[in-house]
Amino acid sequence: MTHGTTDPLHALAREHLPHEIAERWIGLLRPSLRLDKATGTGTDRGAGTGTSTGTGNGQGTGHGQGAVSVVGRLGGLPELPESEEWPVWEGHGPLSFVASLDCAALPSAGLDIALPTDGTLAFFYFDGQLDDGTAVVAPDEPDSRAGARVLYIPAGVPVTERPAPEGIDPFTAIPLTARSETTEPYPWHPAVYREFAPMPDDHPVWGEDFQEALSDHFEGAEHRIGGHAHPVQDEVEAEVAHGVLGSPPWNDPRIQEEALRWVLLAQFDSDDDAGMMWGDCGVLYWLIRPEDLARRRFDRAMFTWQCS
Image (cartoon, rainbow, N blue to C red):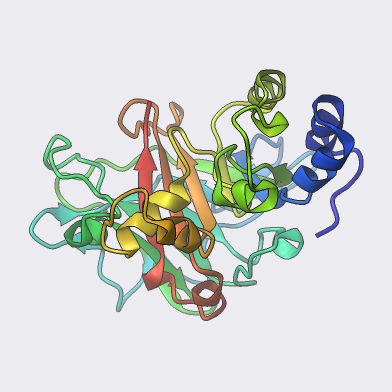
């Protein structure tokens, strides 16, 4: 992947790191799509609660002078095929609808993951509305994995807007637009260790000035497709790998190896406008292996979440 020389992360690396290390670190950057609230002056048709019956994704795009292209939305009500039941975690109850994305509208050609070029992705999560947060969805608890789902609805399949199940209060519908953004790896991501091993404690990548500059680069809620995840705690790939491997000791070297096999599909931040609060200002993460993404095996995506 070729990154533009004007990218701010390139500039930060070259300002704070020795030249050879900066160029190697830049090689670890990955493209993503940042999802922002759509605020164009045109009419963003289909970005709210959708239509009652239709074929396709129901997201729509903005039209009119000054409009922005709507690629999906947070919250609202999902549009699902007649044959698709609202996702349920058996023994706990229905999941909450988090977001939907129109794959045809996403400018995904510049990503390094193979997103579908049409159809809709719909994300659901058991957010604690029904049990006051007692049940926790976690990758190292196999029985809890039904508490988070990604549904892929192919283009042309008839869909109908579904009312929320009893006890589920839908989140406020927020239309989303997308823009390309380069992302950097978490400082202790296994890809960083692989690139710079062996890494002494005073390695420049971990330097205080460089890490503070990266921290200052972050802005607002991070809803994102692809790229590197922005963890609230530690690397989310290791959490998923730990669960996939059956929760071995954390110093098991297989965890780092397995973590390198997973890429971020999507992350959804806490968002006041949508009424979303994941724990204490947390973030939801869905990860997937590239080979499963290429085969559209979204049932094999793994979920984790972190909060402050």
